[in-house]
Length: 447
Image 1 (cartoon, rainbow, N blue to C red):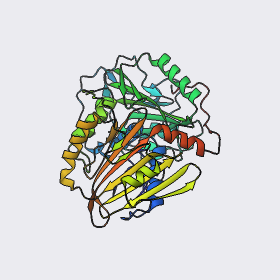
Image 2: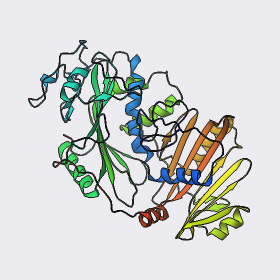
Image 3: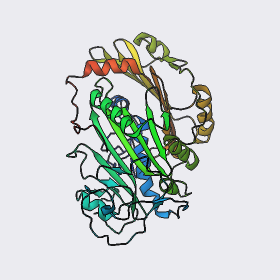
Image 4: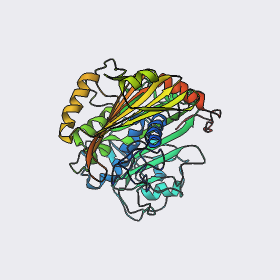
């Protein structure tokens, strides 16, 4: 199965895409056990162009907050401030509100007021009815796409289309009938507009309290004011050769946000590892980050090899030139499928799919990889399908550990090595159209 929005491969019965976070991701594509050359290469190329895992993980967290929030307990009330109990309590520019069908008690939180509790017209603590009175086009983000109910305490609302009139794609997550998280993003932003958003955000919020580094050039800026936190990320979205960015900001009542994530009612996720990743992205539990030089390949296969070197390393592989400067090859044996991609006569990337490693060995394999490669740049700690990756300015290494694949339920380990510099040159040369960027609001500001 594949995601409608970004094309990434999904786990069976997945409720959201672990790459871009959309909660209605499923297509009807049936998984196949035998991979054709074009299919393997297509998936490899799509992976190079999609949103990086760190950023997408932000959206996944937002959707998970909806799915697991139903069992939220009461938050400790050492509270010094109340979230808005009515949208009319916010500033005068907020539209009039609709009387809610259910009287949900206000969420309590502590905050000095240093950080805003409002993005656009949406303020933390308002009800679903308040939100719908501000924007009547909001829909239920959940997979069933039922009309939003003002009496649903744990709903998530988002626009009906990814193309929104003001440029901002807002997602609202409610807890116990009150708005606990506001997410807003802008896609396909030019480098110049993205830099202006950075400057304005720093001018408005000041220096971040915590800077979380994910990968060689990705930062999460986090501001903390009591129970209120803001996370801002500016990241490449499409091909790096086009230079387009996606800018994301999230405003949250942090204890309320964490409560459902700390419940032991997970399906397909290693809870402790997942919670650690979430907290790290919000400035907690940083831990020790170990950075090691990344290898350029496997013992028998190295990036930037020539075709004749690859043929010598993999006897029987068939390599075909299908465009100027570009060639692909594949070798399919009983338990290993290897696909290779060349650009300008050099190996720019390769994927090895192995079916000969039992799932019982996955924990040891994971530990060995971390020992060899250092702290991962990101990933997804699934129990049935886990992804881990490492990257620096030159190389990206992806691993996928799948406990069951195909009708026979065989375990699968996928290793993917990419030369980022050759990949960028290839994408630039293959691009026939100039970059197209989305317009952004004139003020270059989320607030």
